[in-house]
Image (cartoon, rainbow, N blue to C red; front, side, top):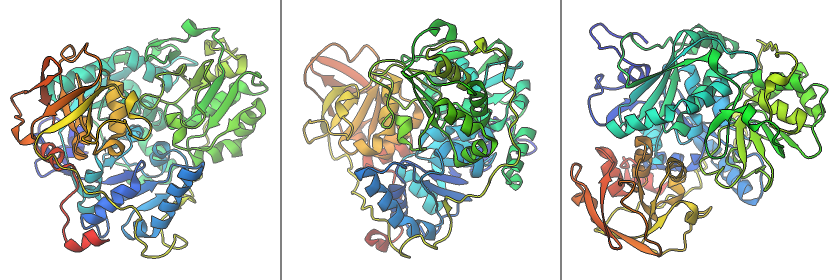
Length: 613
């Protein structure tokens, strides 16, 4: 994207948003921007139902797609799949295509078949951040904003700040993009994001540039951008260059290419320089600490999960297959392979690499979203589980899990213990086939065989729960008491949760739709602005407190909050918890405050008839 004459220098995120906003200076606290792509992965039927209430006829987005991410159908999952199938014709009539189970995990599939550079995408799935590797900006928004995007083609967001990561040098043998991602965590990129968020109360987008960007393929770039949710960032972007154009050409989508790079002198709040040649094979333990794999050398493993939706590329799968050829998995090790996408599975199969993995003793598992959350194939109660993909918030709290590269996992499979992959005799040389299968056989684009024409989505929306007067809420600490279904056993008035870590905040943000309307407030020393928007969009107040101000007292406690109309944007909210006086800061801004008070970001219905559908 080229800047117009007279425009100030802009970051890549600013270029994308400015080209879609009436206020090209992005000067307001909140700006309304046009949306190019909409991805529904976690609660697609709710978003469709809300959009229909807002008057959706047919979406104007260039891509609107719903991923049915459940492949293994026990009773509950079968019921949800049946609901999706029943609603397929209705979704297609509204211009939303459906990706069927088995197509792969949503992030790698979308990167291959739909994502385009210099576009704006909104979604309900934080794990879609990986598509930033192609140069597409992705924001996670509340269901009501997804409905607005579907029905009206635009959303309201906070203008972001930027952190720039400059890459130089060349990676050494047995060091891959997963190791570089772990090095960014070790170098404190998450701390930089937190500092900027705290200073400006604005979402942060990580932008990758530098001379070595051209050495990384688009899938390798996607491994780095998939870190954004883990670091508390709203998104991440790579430049769109010749490598991007080659990737799109191989996917038979060359017309989707647009160049994207930051302007010289574009303002960014922090810069991190990383020499790829200084990165070693690394791992991240279950506490979030990143260390050299040599520190873990000799520790036995009980499970290895190769694949998933982040942290691995087709090149990595080929490398692992090559390193494990003629090897046999030890009897005490469970070796699972979750190939990220159907396209990768076809390439591995036709090349013989899949045969090599199976001969080693690998068990192929379907690309079900619950593999990422640990609901399927969880780590064993004892022993170490080594995985390539980023963990879901809260997954590693009571499990012994390490995250490492594909080559490090190959060493664990070959030897039954963790170790340095550089102990293999010679480096792996991998050639990726250029002829890729691009037949989207599991993408439903027309109504033929989609179910009864005109059948409406079966989901019935509950009315929003607005704030009415003051609220007396049960106060609990941490996320453990919320349970798997959001039931707390507390009183019917609702509850508030005190979070002490960013992971707890991220876990609640991921479950905000499920926990609302009983969860009315989240209190934490730090809440990313993207999470503030998500909470506000479903009627949950995001409140900041000083880390030492809510501490010590045990037993049942309650929190009395005045009506939001009495909450000042400048003045803190003074409350009493037990014998403690606490000052809280409401973090919502602009329209987010109206959403929280109304209990939803759902657009006002355009016609009365839309309620009856």
